[in-house]
Structures are given as structure tokens and as C-alpha cells.
Length: 166
Image (spheres, rainbow, N blue to C red):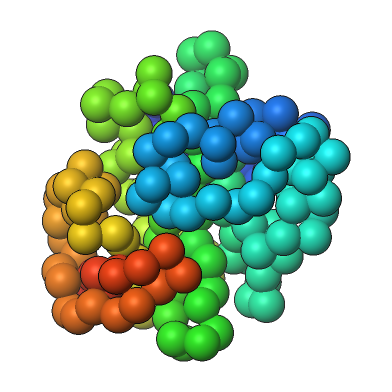
């Protein structure tokens, strides 16, 4: 267990989460706003979870975490902290399945990850990379106190950079 909130539980991803991850990364909004992970089969998703950036980070404690509803145990998304070596930044990121959006889960999970980063990992500054057209994620980042500090080109095109010192 990485973190708990009143409604959510965040835990490390494992190979058993492959079916959920396969579904999540192939949602149209995920592919449009985050990018195509090229996962088309359960085997691809398992390999991604065993060898990919969401679980194999260069810094201890980093990774994407599965976000579960505490009452039902249902997976609702992922939220975590990835180290972006090319930019030398700690990047908070989140994605939810459609039926979990609009309930405040992204903000709640991301706030828990920010607390985890500060208290458990000692990270002083957390950033976020977001597509300019992803208004919902931008609203979440602003509610978390992150501010736009620049922009860059990402693998999926233009990308905004948000940051906050904690």
C-alpha cells in the first residue's frame, strides 16, 4: 500500500493488473491526451507492467500506482510519480477510466501522491506534463496548487509544464 484517502487506496501495480491497464491505455481520452502505449494484447500489458516505465523507475519509490475504490475494491485508474531523467523532474500523472471521471478521484489520488512524494521520498518539487487540450487535467493540477511554468514538445506533441514547490 502506498497511500489511502477517505475514498481511495493506492497500491503498486503488478502483472495481475494487466487487463485493467490494457483497457485504460486504450481508452480514446488516454490515447488522445497521454499517447498510444502500443499495448494491444494482455501479453503486451503484462510485459509493460513487468518491464515498463510505470513500474521500473530509476528512483526508488517512484512509479504509477493502481487507484482502487476503497468501498468496492474496483480499479478506477492510475496515479503516480515518474522520474523524467531527460528533464530532471518528478512528474505526477494520473488517468481514470470514463466511469470514474468527474468524481474528484484524480485530485484526491494526486494529492495523496504529492504527500507521499514529499513525506516518504523527500521530493521538494513536483511537476506535471500535460497536453494543452486536456482541460480536465489542467483543472486538477491547478486545484493541487501547481502553476504553469513553461511548455515543451513531448512524444505526443506540444506539452505544458506545471510545477509546485512543496
